[in-house]
Image 1 (tube, rainbow, N blue to C red):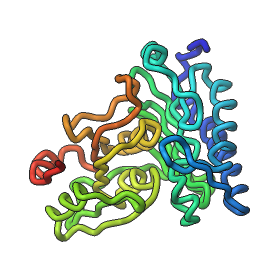
Image 2 (image 1 turned 90 degrees about the vertical axis):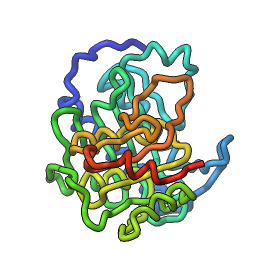
Image 3 (image 1 turned 120 degrees about the horizontal axis):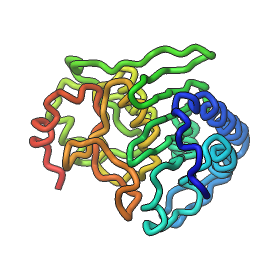
Length: 275
């Protein structure tokens, strides 16, 4: 796989990528409306025919837009010795929130990011059930696309009082509970998949904390949207933005997604034991 045509501006790729994501979403909905067959992957996470169908659309279509590698959750996972040479690649979660898909609660998404030198520079997140998409271009802006209409996104600065915290519908642990104890007046908003990041990007939430394993394809597209809307996705250990394809693992550390990067997050985290 060559890495030619990397000079194509991300803005020129945004609409074609969204069209592909919408095609993948349509494949997912076709399965969602029928009988769902669930298999288990090696890590005991669920896999459905919808994951596979959306994966096929994206891995076939994205290289036609920009001929760089595609790293998908449902595809081959290249070893670090191969990946370390990638300066540009597509990072894909064909169906983020498979557990929510199986539960039929509508809170799942298709996530596609373009990564350049460790940073997500283009991101598209789409909710297949509603058809709403969240789009971001690094340094240019973020938009909510619904019924062919784009609405610019800006995060809320400073956080609301009380703060609104997006929390995982399927993953709740002691560190998140400890953080919420430091925000006793906070309103919590349970959501599935990358939709939690999108709530922060829209200014509907101020914070999404995640303490526990996630993979790089879970976060990259939504990180691009959130950053382009004025927010950040910060590694808890360093309070620096998440970077991609920088280690031999594809797992992220603990992170917080925030609408106002300048708020006193370090002070809040110091009060929250995570061990």
